[in-house]
Amino acid sequence: GQNIDQPTEMTATEGAIVQINCTYQTSGFNGLFWYQQHAGEAPTFLSYNVLDGLEEKGRFSSFLSRSKGYSYLLLKELQMKDSASYLCAVRPLNTGGFKTIFGAGTRLFVKA
Amino acid sequence: GAGVSQSPSNKVTEKGKDVELRCDPISGHTALYWYRQSLGQGLEFLIYFQGNSAPDKSGLPSDRFSAERTGGSVSTLTIQRTQQEDSAVYLCASSLGVDEQFFGPGTRLTVL
Image 1 (cartoon, one colour):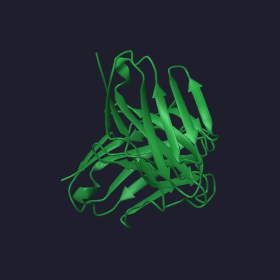
Image 2 (cartoon, helix red, strand yellow):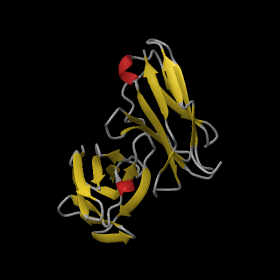
Image 3 (cartoon, helix red, strand yellow):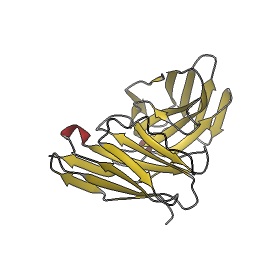
């Protein structure tokens, strides 16, 4: 099976940097995704990591270490609009490549 | 349309009734997914369709749940003999291959 663990909630200050961690236990996976979900809205794609290392995209970066079963999402120069849930998701191997398992999400509160 | 659409946006039904939820994916997307999200929780995988392959139904919680995808496009999720624990937001997503998933706005189902 696969377990995905993320902190339930985090609070950070506007303009700061926050790191949201995701650990997973799975026998293997095709890729790791991060999605953002504002309250009452649908998730939107942020990043996709297949290989180990850091993927940077503007204020958001995502890191993956397959050997450690660990990923993080780094948000820089936080803005109030970044208050949302951040969902980590994996596509396990041997499931046809499309089945996607999501973590419970981390609710981020950005305060002034 | 430009994005994934779902209907109805809200559905209130009585316990024991059957409901049908509809999803129109982005044109040309070969993969279509259904998820369920209870209040404050992450996304629970239900089923996915990919091209002409047999769907992966491994996430359907019981035999009351079924889904079909006609002509490789529109999909319908059917819940028979609804129960109160079926109350949730049902999200549909589509993707082109194994890339990012684009989510619809969801159907909020309330079973009284």
